[in-house]
Image 1 (cartoon, helix red, strand yellow):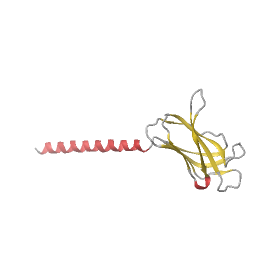
Image 2 (tube, rainbow, N blue to C red):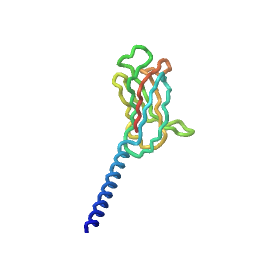
Image 3 (cartoon, helix red, strand yellow):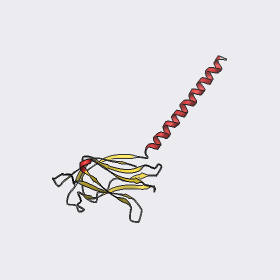
Image 4 (cartoon, helix red, strand yellow):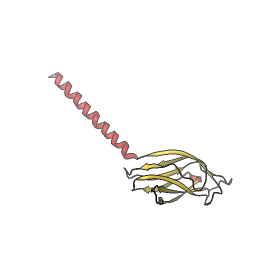
Length: 148
């Protein structure tokens, strides 16, 4: 009788371990589909980030965050900012835009583009630096964080 109890105990332990492992695995998928970090040195209006694929496996918002942002105009004041636009690649057509956000350098903020419900390849582009829409100045920021 004792060997039977020992076998049943191990069987129960194995089932519990499997259940915990599956639970932890599903939690990691629920947190976020993806993220990446980089930097931007000497970037000008028109700069495009690397592309990433969002398969819309979750309902998380897409954020582009800038930290330690400094523009090249030398004044570096509270008006220093980056206007960033989120886009989705579309072959042989103009890329889809998901709006623009202004991120002020003084608070190392984030551009929140909300939940993107269309799967695809995405990137962000700089539309203005401190309100200037030509290539007159550049910006340095390290790091740049993207989560989606």
